[in-house]
Length: 168
Image (cartoon, rainbow, N blue to C red):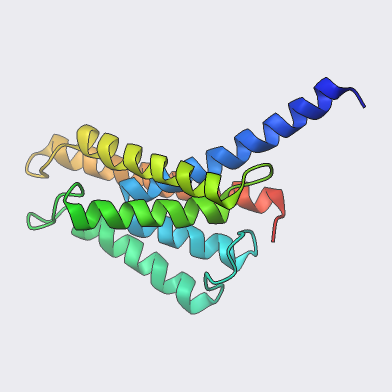
């Protein structure tokens, strides 16, 4: 086999692995519990690299309900800003864990974790900038619901991507 083909295949595997790590971090930055739900679904299919994430249907159901509750609660006037220190730190930790768990071929758990943190920073800051701070007007609600739809779509894409790799 040609050396260029081997390097190209390795590069492709590494980039796919990094996209998953960045993607789960970005998702955790947008909606932290959506990241948890996506990880629990991926774990239930046996497609993550961290064994201590629960694979049971109870965990999957609870995480999914928590993600839906976060989406609803996010629109309340008393919802805290995602950039406050405790919220931001939780998103970074979830991005790191998710990145380590979902990072694919050619990517170490450490590289996955760092990439997941970068995704969480991007998701937190870009999501807040695109969304704005309130849900007082119709356009604010449209942006909030668009962010929810983006988070749900990204979660589904990440779960499907993890399932295609067949990794356990």
